[in-house]
Image (tube, rainbow, N blue to C red; front, side, top):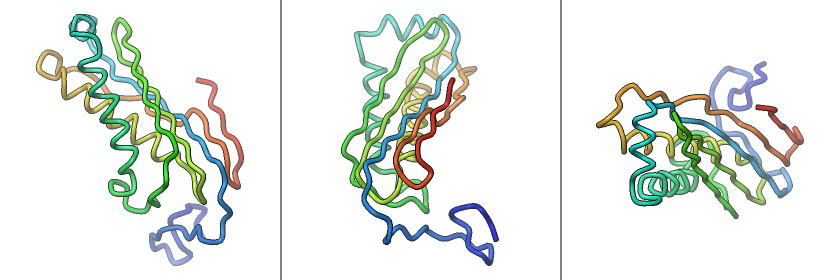
Length: 155
């Protein structure tokens, strides 16, 4: 028997049945970054306020809302909140996404999807000047609600 939630006793993948779980308030926060040359970050900084980063923020929000269409075994969730912030640093854009719902399953995948798509959008918008960018360190920072309780990453 597998400890993986989406694998049954025979080894076949399946969508987890959450029908008997109670509705609970759930929250998740994810983070990631796009590392780039300082000159690339400077070009982002010189754009009219918010153009590229706002586009990436909206892309992350839209992606979180469509997570179940992108990740085959995710349940569609009634999201009560999605927040995506992008912070421009000297050599990177740091992306943080939070997702909230009152549902029978968690919102970790929605927060992670928001970060990933926001990062891809940043990459797409500046790839013409920096093909050496690296998208990475996408990770769950916090989650609450559900049987497994609260998880909190230090970094």
